[in-house]
Image (cartoon, rainbow, N blue to C red; front, side, top):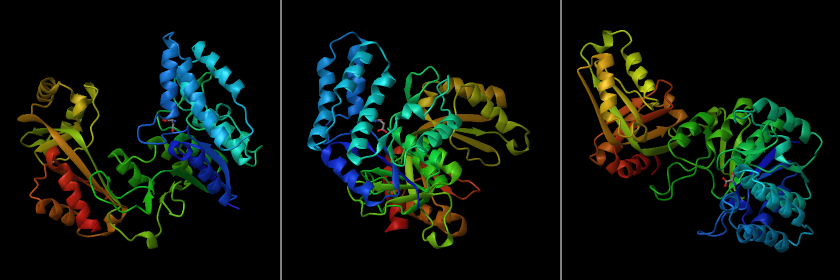
Length: 438
Ligand code: ASP
């Protein structure tokens, strides 16, 4: 028998109807023994997520304003679900405890965490599973960083006493017993921690899309879904803006090689995307797994004759950037030129200061900064074995008469990165997609 951990996002638990779908999914496979819920999300486009309602309500409370009406609305969301599901469950004691904690300044994180907490109690009752408070398993260090060792150990220990359980996502406990949350979307992380803690065979992440898509659907019409992606490819694509899963949700399962399956609660018949450590040769059907990109970059171009023969030139440039507290993205370089790509928002009006500092430190012939650069990453584990991937990328760009401002391919051959003007970003991305996927 396999062991599965299933995490359900906010849209999968937005109302009673969504709870019913979740129950059907969980019951369809007895291996789904541990379930991690988010707080109820939006039921319609301009609805408000329970987590946001809790933040707003706590803000009123912490300013000493009347927060009862706002609190009643939150209570109404949960009671509505309980009533519609016909559950014999009374949360009034929980609500009064939370209300007085709001009055006693229990903290913003505590407030937000109650969405997952209450959602977990309801789901446990509905599924007939035990409820295990995440505060018992998930632990942070004094400095706010996540305590992995403690969490894995405690999760394994606690859950060994529960054949089937619901563990709320998003929060854990500080050493001083106060509640702390992960960053937004953090229930994905809890799911991953639980999967790692209990040594699951698979971590299922149920959401409202069919998995990762090859490109952003806001730019490319109807992009194909990605069937299989490696952790490393996912890191590249998520960094570039493909958001389905919280970035920090990867590391706990990655370490022990537990695959993640992104699935759609509203279309459970679809296989979704499998995120794996490695793929077998038979899976290698494509050279490009995905295409993603982002605007908002600047490029620092440095030129100096005989740069390649000068010891420590790169270190000096990067030393200045470090001193300015900036981190860089790419370093495409030539014999006498070096370029550093970084997010424009990091430079934030310090262009001249930065140029002068690099000039002073390196004695460069010229230093210039240009902004309004967009970066596109064409990512694919299959690239390393294939010829002509770069040729296809450049052909697609040339077809649209677009000028490439920079290009970079690491020797790992996991991606090809190109930089274009922000104004032609969408056209470039569409054209590359067309070259590989149409
Ligand atoms: N409810 C939290 C949020 O809205 C965490 C989550 O859903 O993963 O960010």
